[in-house]
Length: 161
Image 1 (cartoon, rainbow, N blue to C red):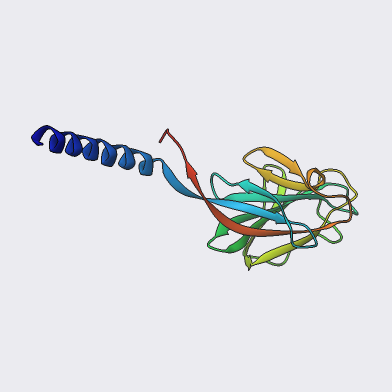
Image 2 (cartoon, one colour):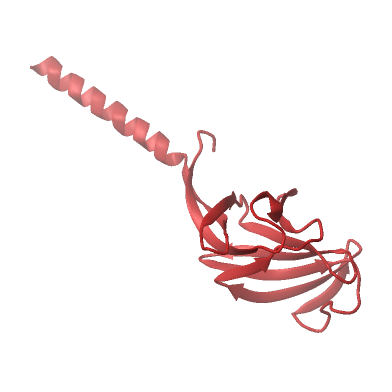
């Protein structure tokens, strides 16, 4: 009986230690969720640093525009716009700071959205940029389809810390 109790104690200690190690590898990470026009979930993109850029090509200037967002709770927080060509249809007098950085015009903003509805452009280069990688919207939907972006969170498990 004494050996049985000792064995149960050892198994319990090992189980608690293994659970502690497993939970140490759990973390909540921000994710960008995409939905089609019928409200069906079509993709989830993990955002390691909580940020992403909505990239599109301006219809008049034919140059790239990057709207930079951060996930803040359940909100998509627009904090900057970057673009290459100054002119018609481009913002310049709104926001908190207007500057040139690395050859691009930059405006700092503070706007939050619960969701963002986007009509997929026929011009190539329309999608999401995350950490240097680019994901065109046409991977999930057709040109001129409406997609919706929303903030979310997922639990991620990693054996490395």
